[in-house]
Image 1 (spheres, rainbow, N blue to C red):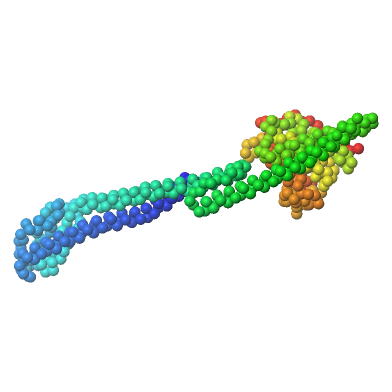
Image 2 (image 1 turned 180 degrees about the vertical axis):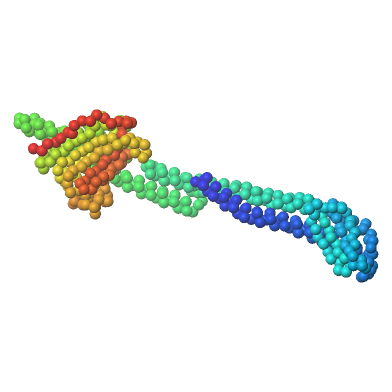
Length: 439
């Protein structure tokens, strides 16, 4: 910004200086010439007075003039030519000074019936004076440009430094630093922005504290309820009926996974930038979801399949990835039809040259109506009577890991979840689909 302000200001100064300087140079050039010619005319007036004095009276012609008084008025290197009529009307001439002047500057004066005077002067003195005048004007132009550049530098620094400070303040606010900044820059507009940022930081900080307190209270209540459920399931695990023991054991696994998910979500709410750096096997991680969703799909006599390449890894938090895909599976179960398929594949480099892994969740239902498709990821919006939180939460979980979620196809619905690949140029080994068969 400093450079842009400086260059624009200097450009304006240069343009204005040239618009004023060039006419001034031309004017100085012409003024010197006019002064030189005025001086020659003054000399001619003096010479005319001397010639008329020597002629004595009007009509008295002297064929010979005393040229010594005239020689004193002729400029150095110049030439004076006196032209006067004779009684026979044949012109007679007398000259004073140099016999010839190259590229002379000429001025003449008519004496009426007494003749005329012609004064020639060499141009080099006038040209030297003209160039000196142009040099003076040019020096003033350069000096004005230099002064303008200094002023532009000071102005650019005065503007860019406060703007950089305000931008850095906004960046710190976006990064979670809500401390007020008491610095002001004596620029009313920027100081107003700083005050607004301070007020916003206080308000955002208070809201975050209230939300974190609420999340802590809710998570505490959930953990208490899950602990109570786990205790009841532990009692059922000791039942004599083998079927009851198997169901209790399965339910205990569900409770453990739910507890882990709650802990991960609470931790993510406290630190939005928290991301496990170790790559995870996407197919292996999503395979854990099949056992959770097989029973609901079997009840509707539908299938849930997982297809992908073994060894395809992604840099994502396991719990976030599972919860985001679970939201899509739940939507497919409630609003879709037919087989729900989960496909994992590597899509290679994107525009930012990162290797990406895509997880696609599709079914064979009626799809997403065109009227609501642009708003399905808005928090609180629902086209099927639900809370409208699921898809918004799923997208937020994916974006917290640096990925994105998109609706790739409306009818039938195909959702795509993109996350950064865990290794370069990986394709993995193809494995057959894992099927959840209906019963």
